[in-house]
Amino acid sequence: MNMVDELEKENMKEQVPQFRVGDQVDVHVKIVEGDKERIQIFNGIVIARKGGGNRETFTVRRIVQGEGVERVFPIHSPHVVDVVVKKSYKVRRAKLYYLREKSGKAARLKELPRKKKK
Image (tube, rainbow, N blue to C red):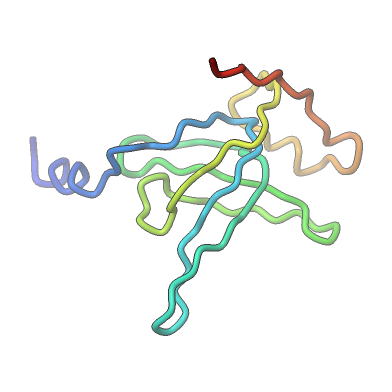
């Protein structure tokens, strides 16, 4: 292994959150304001996942006051505290960029039934 691989392995998280494209998620992001820290929640639908290893990112899209907002989060970032899956939707693509042009009822996805834990 070269030095770059060793540095990347040091900075990777041990517990990577399990989610897929098409999941509605709450991303808990650590915000630093001056000397204070707080957790801010960004919720939306995962429309893309790309990259691999330490460089893996995911894109979350939501609608705020009728305007679409997207944020790209690195999975292994120390600022991403947690990713909580709220719902899962049936998708047939790896990237849901077509949702950018859709609005209202046209942007709906079919929900998958949640598996019950025993």
